[in-house]
Image 1 (cartoon, rainbow, N blue to C red):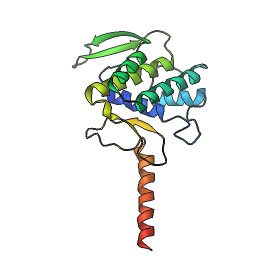
Image 2 (image 1 turned 135 degrees about the vertical axis):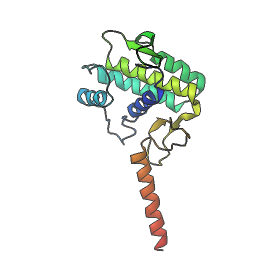
Image 3 (image 1 turned 60 degrees about the vertical axis):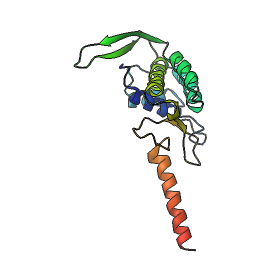
Image 4 (image 1 turned 135 degrees about the horizontal axis):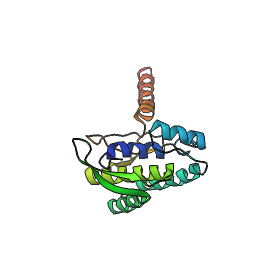
Length: 182
């Protein structure tokens, strides 16, 4: 896994925290092994989910959410560094035209280990490259989601722009329509 692909890693961290029941008004999007396996497949994670993984991933999800909700730089660095601890060895990959630092998971790594490493890399990369101000709560009034903004201008407002952003736009449109008919 490349250590410089923090945008991809931060996206997975965002996707993970936004599977929580509080984001979906009580519905957990990772309630069981099958949904966790589907999440791992969707994100091309190199390990398979095992029976004990959902509970461990729920704990990881809460940890990552807590980091996003409290984005003090020192806290983010310490927390993300702890997330990367279950890894294997770090090395410089020279197999391509571009040299890059990579890390490989230890043999027997779980999906939780993999997600922990990815989330840690994403958080550390964003803190280093973009700053702690890129960790935000969703701007939609009815959403409790959170996200890591890796966009170039840094103006992202919604945890799921296609869902939350669309809901806000529809509500604004309906409000304008209602005001026009008064």
